Length: 347
Image (cartoon, rainbow, N blue to C red; front, side, top):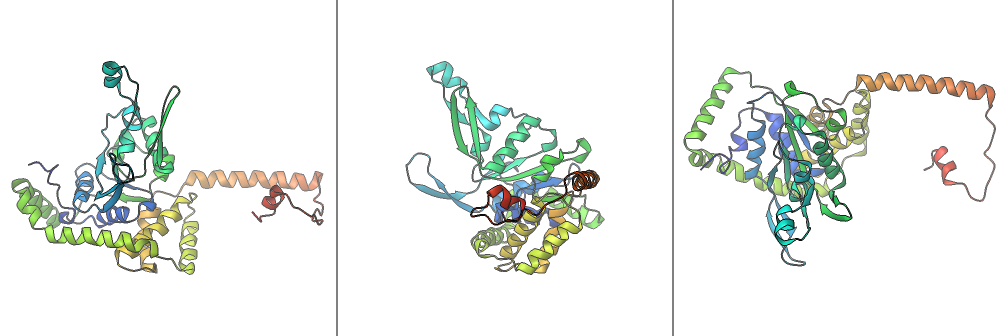
């Protein structure tokens, strides 16, 4: 058997607390918005993602061959090949059937097969931009359109997106980076004893994967059960209003422009509370999630650009006050237009 069939246990990984935590929280709450793993080669990014196979939660799916019937099965890990074409990802015409049976049929792509599962994109910074855009569109909309001429099919495409990359090979566009809720810098383990332990565990796993996995079977089974329980608790988890205010103050204090920052922070905090068997978020949840949700979100360019826009708007406002003095237009009307309500901040 290969390690693809017997994945290295997630809980057997030495160190990498943030990596393991982010992946588990992503399974508990897909509303976090995906996870990006960034780090050099050989630090365990792909190994950790494949280790999720042992703790995937059970989900209810529609049976493809029976109308109205459902089945319960574990989420699957769908890996996107680096050489995937846009048609492979989105879907397209089945060329074999078209040639052999003279029937043109639009078939699903990788994004549709990832529906209800985990989609793992390794070396996402090296993918063709059109492929990346298609993945992000599907992740945002929860569906994929396949269009070939007049033929159109719509496939559901809701999945947990996990991407990994080595920043030495190039950065991600800000638009792509913003789509990932949690970001983890997967650094090499520094402690020499820990590095030696990594070697020993890798050696033992290679020599006897079944026996090695058995040593972590009880912990792994307990984690899988906890993930299922946390997913049941999650809908009931609330955030005290004062913590919401503090979390938003933190985001604004760091001058982070994207509203996805507070979504990832608060949804990650809810997932952590559920993982700890609680239905109320506390301050420690915010403290633990903030480094994962807010890393790589500050933009010096955006600050400079915003300052320039504000200065220009102040100049325009001053000119308007000089040439078009403001008048009192607050007269009573039987009906106020929606545009006016928007202008006045009521909508």
